[in-house]
Structure formats: structure tokens, C-alpha cells
Length: 161
Image (tube, rainbow, N blue to C red):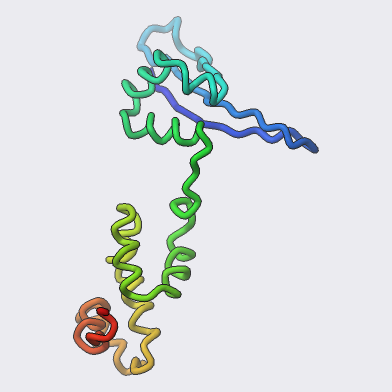
């Protein structure tokens, strides 16, 4: 059986009323001829009901794992992490306005932010924003890595404070 979990929000046209649903879709996969072309089954439940249906939550854990269950429950409770949904280029743009010491704290917030803070793109934008950076340095930065370039030529003890 293949199962897909879709925490879903439906907005009725011209209305503020939201249908908050979790939809569990399953397909039976079998070599038997009588099962071919079988339509998927869907189990629909409201977000509130999902939070109270332990049997359905156990199914989600069995198929997707505890992490997905916790994420789904958070969505059902209205806990959204909009920053995590933004594309990397927008997050990098936001990060460009932070002090370096703040990005070290941001890197501790999640795996995604840690990867972004360690990425070559982040360090390239950091080095390029340094007043002392010239286009002649680009080849050196590409050869040695942008992060290493920053800590070798641009990092000062003042920025550590």
C-alpha cells in the first residue's frame, strides 16, 4: 500500500471560512488482476479531529515516522514556520542584513539554517559585501573557498565581539 499524507487548507471562494483537513490517501499495489485500476482511498478528517484520533496518528507514524506526525500535528495546531518555507535565495538576502555574530546564532536554529550559514553562497555574499573586496580577488576566493577567504583576509577581532 502506498500512502500520502496531505495536511490541507481549503479556502471557500469569497468567504473567510476555512476547511482545515488532513487527507490520508492510500493505493493498493498488488499483482492480482482484480486489483488493477483500483481507485485510491481517501480518509479525510478535520485538523481538530486528527489531533484526537490516536489510531490515525499511529498509522501516520507507521508509514511516515514520528517526525512527520509531529510536523502534521504542528500544522493542525496552526504552528507554521514561514521562514523554513522561503527559498534559499530569499533567506540569503535576509541573512545579508545580519551581523556575523547573529548568523552564528541563526545556524543553531535548524539544519537548514546551518547548511545555509555554511554554504559557499553565504560566504561569497559575505566577502563581496566587504569594502576591501575587489574583483581581482574573485579568482583567489574561487580557488581557496569563500569562507576561507573571509577568515584569512577580512575577519577582524572586532567582528567577533
